[in-house]
Amino acid sequence: MAKGIRYAFRKLVPEVGGASEAVRKLKRGLQIVLYERFNRTVEYSVPFGAKSFKFLFLPLGEGQGSRGLFFERENYEPLLKYGHELLRDGGVVIDCGANQGVYTCAFASAVGSSGRVIAVEPIPKQIASLKRNILLNSFQNCTVIQAAISDSVGTAALFLRNKDVEATLVRVESGDSLEVNTVSLDSIASNLERMDLVKLDVEGAEAMAIDGGHDAISRFKPIIVCEANGQSRFDVAERIVLLGYKAFLREEEGWNECAHDAFSQSIFFIHEDKVSEVLASLPVTARGNLRSSQGSSSTSIVGGHASGNKTV
Image (tube, helix red, strand yellow):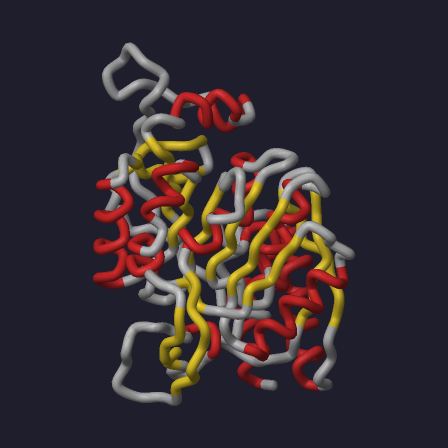
């Protein structure tokens, strides 16, 4: 319980958004302490642009993916705060590394009943939570694939390390492993007529996912949102750029082009053939500061780099 209280106040101290926001965050922090102390599962709402979705807080403790979202809500990560700007009714999204379904539910709320979200997640415990959150929202536009995204279809060892949220196909020295089925982006896309966005958060296996999706990426040119750390960040960024993509960050003032290996919580890759189309579809508030790197075209935007600290 003491750890939970420390967590709440550690999050509260940097708050500069005003008294009401500070009180709101203090309340959430104390709720986390109580819910975990009494082992309570609680339903709450998370905004995603003009839409919202319901989600379950699970009393799993620190580092397991429940606390941060409950505390931060739409401010949890740039993708959750701004991802709605990239999605439209009828869109098709692949959520690789779906975990408990935060983004599966967010995407499903944005693309509507005519759209589709395909959630890929290998861990049975997370699959159960994912399905519960989909059911909680009565989403009929979600497909769940119990497998790990990789460069081929088959089976592989999934290394669990010390937390389920850090499970990886990349071999590690310690920790248990679990044999799981694997799928590729190409195998998923074989029955699709469109693919608008791919989210990759697969703990170091992002490059493998790209290697297994060349045909699908070349065909559909989806927006690719990638969260990677360490050397894998550079490996996956190089692969994506070689496929004709430009890298962008969503900062407070708008969408800015960045170096493809910029350190960030989430980097958004947009194919060079679709940059103009995507930028034209953005809300005016997100395009207000866009300017050409050459001063003559709106197809390229520039800006500084950003960094983020994921809340766990």
